[in-house]
Amino acid sequence: MSFRSVGRILPTKGFLIRLRERAALLQMGIEALKMKRDQLIRESQELLKQLHARKDIDKKLEEAFFMVKMAYAVAGPQEMRKAALLATPLKIEVRTKSVVGVETPEITASEFRLAVSPSLNSAVMAAAVKLSEAIKEMMPLVNAEARFERIAEALAQTMRKVNALEKIVIPDYVAAIKYVEELLEEEDLEEFLTIKKYRQIKRGE
Amino acid sequence: MSKESYLVVRTHGLMTHLLNPDKIRSWAMIPDWESLFKEISSTEYGMFIEKQEDLKSADKVTDVTLRMLGRRVRIFLEISKGDVVGEAAVRYLAKYDVENLKRKVFSLVIRREGISEERFLPISGFISNIDSILRVSDVGQISDLLPQGKLRDFISTWLSSGQMNIPLLDIGIDRAYLTETMTWAEMTKMREVFRIYAENYALGVILRSQLMGAEREIYSSMFEFLSQNVRKVLSESNTFEESLKALLSTEAHKSMASELMEIYEKYGVPWTLDLSLFKEFFSKIRSLARMKPLSPIFPFSYIVAAEWESWAVRTVILGKLSGIEPEKIYDMLSLY
Image 1: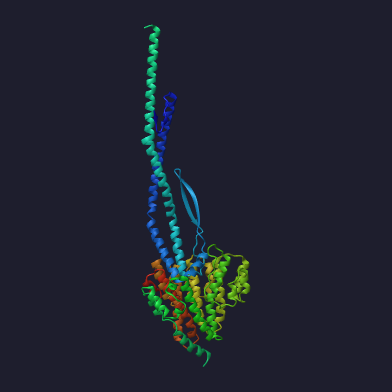
Image 2 (image 1 turned 60 degrees about the vertical axis):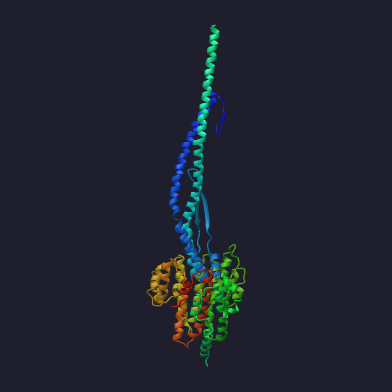
């Protein structure tokens, strides 16, 4: 007989000891995974608060794009090209941060300056100011969303693991241990009966 | 008839060719492109706009409006050649060459992938050798080609210093241009106009510098072009908002500052600053010209009026193209 999670069963005492050891380890694993799951849930709940800022950021971006449109109308495309030439490009640094073993990205934007010349048209400068503000304010949300995505993925994976261990693997091991114990008891009984019989024969009963 | 009187008479004639500012504003309310195209085709701009699709190209519209301005300017310069007004117009319009010069220097100093193409304003030729300057491939050649003067001295000094501070370069070019222009203007009958111009120009640089968060020492050199009163009220202001509040207390810039303050409070950014400054300059020159209709200020006011026309036409078309509400475009183009 074989159990899906345990594999081939050997009705030996050594195997039973190993099974018991593995079952105990799995139990500890479940506890650890449950702790991880709870921590991930707490982290995602914290992040949820930050994700609510999306509405404000959307509004800020809308305002910034409205300004870009205005700048285009007032200053014209050539001035926008000049602004693009003079702007210090957005430098992105991506580091990884571990949250209970889940690697989450941490993005920082630096050296971002869109308006660097006082000869730029004020409409272009206004658009640059609005856009820089929106992007700067957007960065924590970007980080929160990226982190939330990874944490949600890890959370789903952890839940699947806990469920599989609780509902399939551990019951399989418990059943396997019980099965091996029964087999060994039967073997013991058989051996006892054989010895008893042997002694009776030897005594000539 | 003296040259001055001849110019005044000719300018009256030229003024009749300009589009009425209210008419241009009313274009903002035209609901469809076909009707707008018909309206514009019936004006002198129709020479450059052949088909309705031309109105939908921002590059084409910018090009056309500046070319039209160039055309008007050329006619004016032909009739005012040899006169102080002609010289004043050349020195005033040199701001376009200064802008192109900046673009050339920036493109040679900051070479950025994807923005290799140099785009210059299609109105130039007011500084000698500017066409050759705009063709050079090495920034070092620029100072050799520039005529003797403050601009050349500044560019040479800046190049030899090896500095890469863009705001300093930018303001340095503006300062050299204004110093050279004002040195000339103070000796002529045009000093009144040019004082207004220099103050308007310097105020723009100062306010934009404050808006982008520049240190005071970067733009402090522009204070010398401000009138004593304005310099005094701005002496304690270090931020854009503070300066705007200070300007509200001046008679000369009250209307402009109050309009900008309204925009600043509504949008958080003073995006109409240039438009407001130019409107203020245009309004002042227009009223000066009305007060002194026989002075050289009247012919000079034609150049500013032509510029306003070019600016207004571009704003209407590009504003529509960008999907800005007609009422907003209409309000933007209201004169003081």
